[in-house]
Image 1 (cartoon, helix red, strand yellow):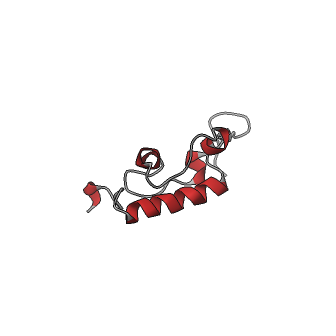
Image 2 (cartoon, one colour):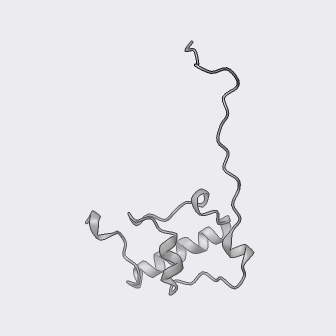
Amino acid sequence: MATRSHDGPRRRFRRRPRTCQFCTDPSKTINYKKTDILKRLVKDTGKIRPRRETGTCAKHQRALAKAIKRSRHMALMAFTSGRYR
């Protein structure tokens, strides 16, 4: 068994739960035409950010995924960034 240099229990980092930005502010709507909001929720590699990173609830995460995919299909957003082509 490995010994540790300090005494005491090992503490894990717990991130505080984030609140859904779409639930707290009903004026924000999820629409495939609003690419400025959608681009913040997509990584620079083109992947959709997971719920644990964005803090959105499950209902709005599903709507976000649908809007991002629709926006990509309508050529308003790129599928990937230019670096990875």
